[in-house]
Image (cartoon, rainbow, N blue to C red):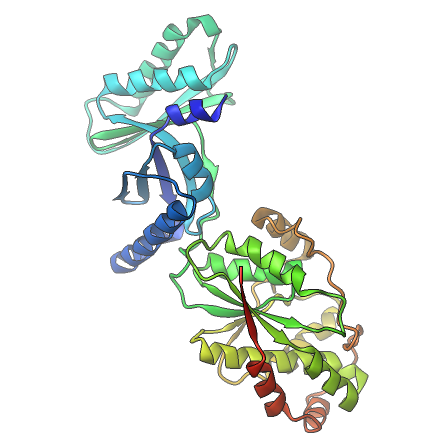
Length: 396
């Protein structure tokens, strides 16, 4: 079926809000809904999708547009939306519902198709939901008798959905799944350590899903790592597709000189933890300057399991004023890869990023006292200050 036929069969997008939004206190719900409406309008403007109205109902938004199919595809990627459906609006009169349902059936059903009719209502009407299903089903079979249609309530090819709300009704056949969560911007922004691999990108997306705009901070480790900044930027471009209307900037730190100092002055087994502690300190300064509320990393409990928590604790001690958030700590590799596919970052060339050559690939036994002695050989404040001065921002 052509896109033109799809558009002719719909003039409205039903936007279902994420489940969390509906259970909030009234003033919080209104705040989240206003933020979500603003984000939706930003997406419509970005993709030049015309619309006539965006009406709010409890748990729903109804977008009036001549490009309902296109709008639905775009809005399904707006955080805070659980699902969307391109629909055809009519009145709540039973006759009008039946007529419009027959029209939609003519566009969607093919010869030999099976179908079912489902109805849900809000408000008082002179008919029941069963009346709607019965009348619509009968008229569809009668009007399109030449197609050899059949009713299948268990596993139909097409489901004609009727949603009646007070004086209006909407007929639709598609559910485009969103990701739910909270509207982006409903929570404070955070600094995200973006190293270009899947883990850091998924961690960024997970806090975005909780409403936090991100400030991606990438540490360029040239010449100690074969990873290029291109990996991080490609991943960031994909992330920003979930953040239309928000700044599309990545902040890049030249971390190579810092690693050179660590390599020259510190034992090999300490280089990884010292590098991470320095990254955290730099991220803390960026968070202070940008009024962010935390630092996000893609670290998780991988092998060797017995020492990961110890190393994370040693790293976190370097940060004094900001919490470190690790969204992936409860996930395994397959779950992270599944989220990467959902987000759309599995094919942007970021799966394999080598560990820095300046850092040990093995997890040696390291104590807090050893770390403290090693850092005394480094001018930490100077390294942090130099890094902050040389930060570059790239707009994508």
